[in-house]
Length: 152
Image 1 (cartoon, rainbow, N blue to C red):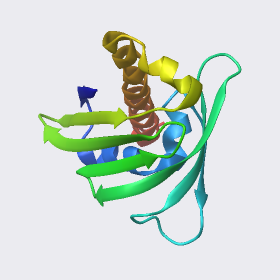
Image 2: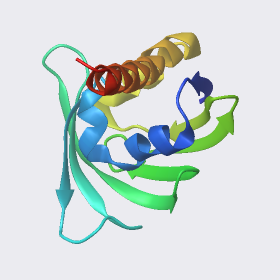
Image 3: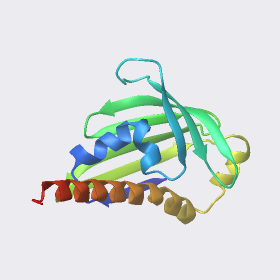
Image 4: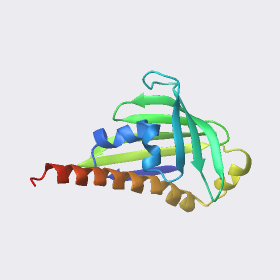
């Protein structure tokens, strides 16, 4: 599945959120936990322990692995079993914002195969929640910065 989304913020503001799993719980509703495995700066091959909240009481435990990072342009993540998935976020400047080309693929395992049976438009709506959450987060940051910048 591929989504093309416009966000009203430049790539220098948008991209860092796709590249840092530690922020995902702030804007992606299904993300419950991302914790870095190991020390040092994140680089290709870095891993994050991951927990996603799917439906009701169901949680999925796996790892996210950084496969590719091109700062402010492109990041690729691989999620281990049971997701067995890959997502690529490619960011490009568009007007005064960012065009995000998000490409999702994989072969989910176990009971998660039921998710793969959802119609494409339903999966797209679910995935779009992440982008709406990121837009709201960035807008709120701007509002706070504006409030601080205005004289009292």
